[in-house]
Amino acid sequence: MEVFVNYPKDEEGIRELNKAVAQVHATLVLKAVEDLDISSESKKKVIRTLVQKAKEDALKEEKENKKKGIEIAY
Image (cartoon, rainbow, N blue to C red; front, top):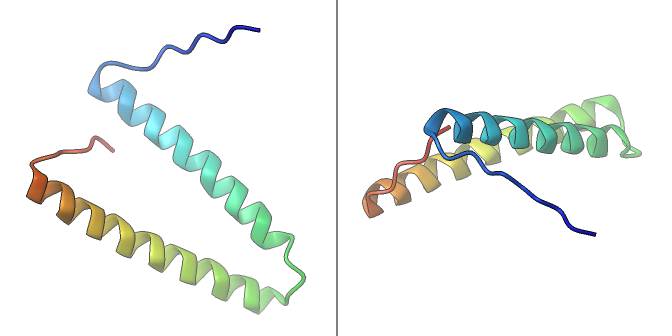
């Protein structure tokens, strides 16, 4: 079996791909949290914690990339 993948080459295409991948990841995470055997309030707390951690990680990565002179298209 052969699989051919055509990655986007322009900034707009890369941005769209990044957005689509992020949406898939978010959907999978939400499904995993929904499947946990915990209360709804605990699920909300898990999601809030994950969102906060993701924001912190994104800011940290952005700062590191700026130091390296790397600009990421989102």
